[in-house]
Image 1 (cartoon, rainbow, N blue to C red):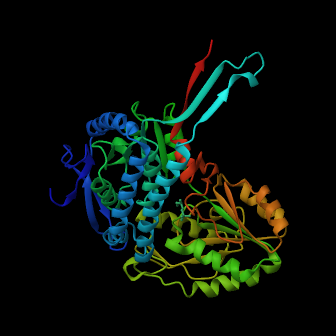
Image 2 (tube, helix red, strand yellow):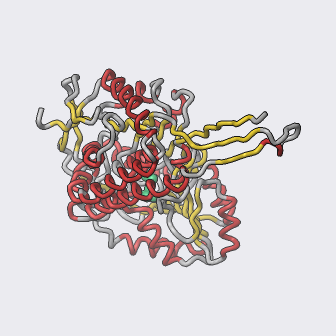
Length: 478
Ligand code: G3P
């Protein structure tokens, strides 16, 4: 069927034997925009088999050649930034400019991974035995890093290209094969990215992209005995995967409820600008978006006034027009956000704007005087809706941040650097930003969540480390 995008396996584009497809709804038009193959369990099994065969060859390919192939991939991907961005606009309603940025950032991420792999995988360890009690100097240990085998990469809808390559590039430079399961919304952008990889020339079967319904092939993939590592970014599904997965290293980045803590001495203009960019960009559909503001009562009014004023300048509309606020990814997501808003309204939160929704397009809201009994104080809307909790003490804000199940990132605004560092130590989240909104990048920084926000640490360097194992050879002298 010419209308259905093919899946990628054994170095070829293929039609699934299922004869079925999965539709991708454009969040702006609510019409089916694209279709992808609904792959079968047999096709999953076959691609895992091919991946193992290809990985054996790839692991023996010199590191500098692996790096060269990744650099080629990065170059082709950057050349394709416009058509891929177009797909991102249609599949996930990402504003056009941000969509281009996502692709360019992905190219840079691939090149950096190649360079970083060259640096860190070149080094091993040499140990001698006589430092441990009872040993003479007769054992030499040579330790180096070897690949894990086949990495299963599952990125989410919000960065279907960038969060795919943030798994693929570290896996490949380290000598692994990859099975990519793209998110359904974002699948076409991801397949286009995979085509760039195809053009760059990697061994057949080393990377495959299997599209389809999570409910049909998800469990098989995540519980597959041939999968040696799972790198997942997304929501609650990650918790279910971690319960089912076998004895393989897991890298998980799940939700967040990133707290923006604003102290009395803060630069309120700076804080307000960061809430606008860090909270409302891409309609709040980022794990690292500001998802709750805890502000000291004495400066709350001034901060809220500034944010409300700046919110009037946010352009609400379609991604093709580069609007700041674009339709959220699905109807069910929009309904969920609406539920959180209605709950806050019923519990007497103060609304600075009227609730307005057309299809999946939700106008940005700042919800004030939020209290702990409201769902919005704790849950992650993944939409352009931010709650404000007015606090009497800094400890109250820290407590609110730490009491959440999520612990991805947080930020603190103050001019007192000593205070900021003490607060960063007290906030139990993977990263605390001082005087800026939460963000994952630059992409070589460590990126991790505590509690329900994740397992392990990402960032280029950490991902390469995580996708390798130490192997030792011990020379025993007479
Ligand atoms: O939501 C995905 C998460 O990785 C956010 O990345 O770059 O928007 O901070 P970023």
